[in-house]
Length: 88
Image (cartoon, rainbow, N blue to C red; front, side):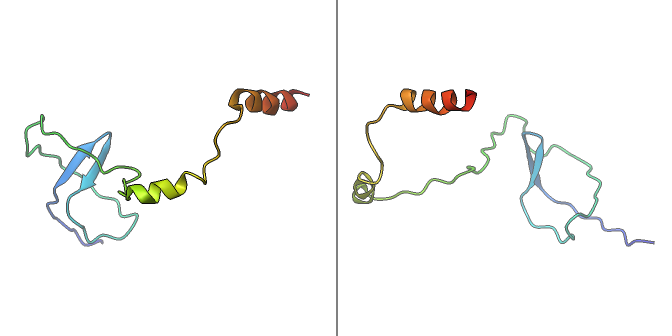
């Protein structure tokens, strides 16, 4: 018989996912049962962390990148040539 663990954990629900606000001592893949109680007003706004966090850099660093990025060219012509060659 397995040991029963009862604990209360706060979480935020956003886009179909519960994000825990504190760590839980459970092994990966453990199956749990959730009893959900709303503890804050439903209007509380939750901002999920960015998928790709922003990193601030100085303007001089950005100036150094200017020469790395190619300018000019014909994007439409290049795209047509790429797809036209696939049709042959």
